[in-house]
Image (tube, rainbow, N blue to C red; front, side, top):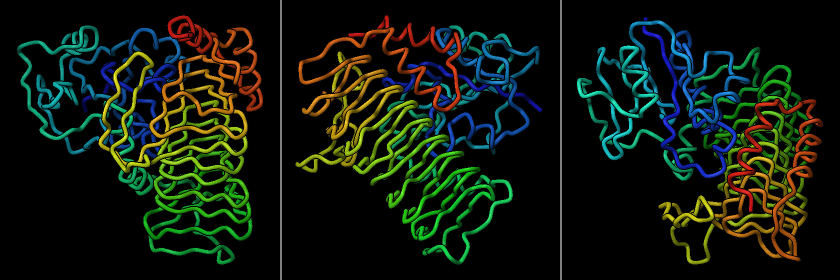
Length: 400
């Protein structure tokens, strides 16, 4: 049985969402792409390969070798941006499956020396036999993830079983015929509506759904997360672990450890970790012209057409929003940004920007780190040395 290396080829363009994580750690449905790959090949994972700047941090949080290959003669190398990995894939040694449009490797069965060449130099040797995959298989931009969210969330739920799951008790209001799974240690308060008309629903270990909330599938509520009183969680939403979410939220992914506890709309969006939305913060996910949304992932980058009519915002890790903040369609909020202005946030907000009605300046590093430690401490977590070092690297590279 050939063992697998999941690799980040650094060809994805995800803006601030990959400042603090590898591409395969991105939550692209209920699961990350790495978790989806592992679910297909549960006993074959031998390690991970990431860009060198991420190596120390990923090694901190993954209990597998990172950037160190085993002594196996042959390895199956799987791109961590593969949206829907196919467990039926069969490749002979020395063969690679490549995305036709981009030339990026989807998967390759390689001798160890050829795998090292692929990971270190980003290319296949000439003797490798290449087969082309004519359809897009790899996520490259955030809107690729967003355009598949209805498929990935439902697939993740239906291929995952939670421990001692149960269906809602009769005291809850249930409509629709798709499966609903509630972990035995999840807490469902009175008068919760589960609407499984459009897709399945899963409420994971130690999650809480408070009174009067409406949960519409496909939807996944992660471990230790709380859905607040009278919240409306619309279809195609995946909320990672340790989040608090209220108000109206739909077609949105929360990476984890973020709060939107109060009223306000958040739609067609993607939220990193350690984000806090002040009460009444609301985003737009539709242009008044009903046209395709364009998005600029980096402040100095080009605006790119996404092909989507509905697209809200991308919010990097540790971003904070004051009460009543307005976020415009197609916005990208950089890692560590603090938005505290009566005007809407800039469409592409720089990393570590401190924005008030007096203007924009750089968030002081020492003050930012104090706030980051305080928020993480509320979850009884302490940032590791590797985490702080990478945050500082991002700060030095991108601060205003």
